[in-house]
Length: 260
Image 1 (cartoon, helix red, strand yellow):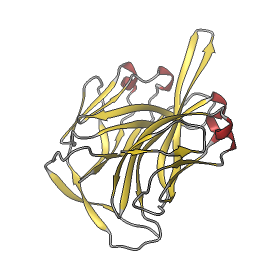
Image 2 (cartoon, one colour):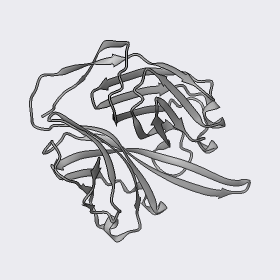
Image 3 (cartoon, one colour):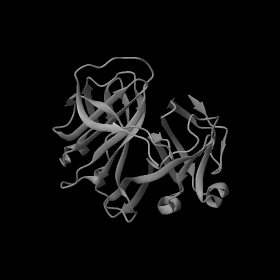
């Protein structure tokens, strides 16, 4: 676990779960930012200061920005859960950088979700092929199905991606997805993104959830993002807390590599 030593956007101390090696770093965190603070408004790039990392700089990676918006209408209140992706990178051994995107600044608050893998920049190495872990995916409250499933399990970290069908049943209850054969030593905040956004703000419908003990739980999404013909997705890297072993690995062409 990393405890931040400061930041340039007026935020409090941030606890960041980490896996670090000489080739890559995986960081997991969720934190809120007050967009009305003077420090945030002065910042061009969001910076988090941390103790020494194993990489001195990284290629650009992806994290998420999220916010809420509500609107009064004649028949009640519409609530929107919205967000998009941001660029993030390691500037040096002590600075995590996150792109500042001001599309939600007037809402007064944003949440940043790091479920991110960083790789070394400016170094050539051989590609290391990983293996795909075969999962059995079941849904507790929804009549749904998944596609494009990818799962990589390594010592200390893992990766998961899937695309979900466009059923409107997602918005009837909490979304609970059981991942049989996924490591149970993972606890990470993540998002379901790519849903309909009917608000006037940019981005897509996005809902924050959590993975614990091999189960993804996303609290009941707001009905304003309910629609068909939208295929939401889940994509995260996570730190493993223990050494639980999964089985039934199958080789595929997924690889982790260094970049220039």
